[in-house]
Length: 219
Image (cartoon, rainbow, N blue to C red; front, side, top):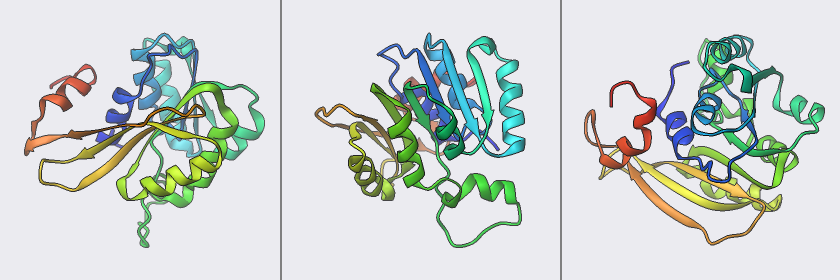
């Protein structure tokens, strides 16, 4: 899987101001989110869980070859298996979930597993977070904008409340494409902001450059 804009945005935008000690990357893929949080924070325990065997192998290899190998570990398991086996609580949970809900499937089963939301229903995600997040922890996720109300409703039923939302548009005249949301068990006044990625093709906005420049070799 290529590293997509969604993951880079989420990894750069997610708050580490509370200096999390323990972090969980759900559905880690190649491990990019866990690696970004390792780069941005002093978290001593950064775990990832990935169900796809090939992605798990690549994630583990990327962790081992990184400067933060002693702080990173990937589990090969489904999310629900992980919830049942792990008793630890996490100060930060981050997730770029598979959320493509179109009716068609491709002929590539591993890509389907990563791309379609039947691999990780939002109900499973919220169940896991409600069981694994520490009382003062943060859950950070990126989803299609059209799913925002649905996910917030599911989270609310588990006493998880949105703290910050970032609405992402491809360019000025585009519709909102993605919602980045931070949830917590603590109710606070919701802060909503907007990010536009490009002014024209491959001409990135100052806001996008400032947010992501630490993670691109050419920006």
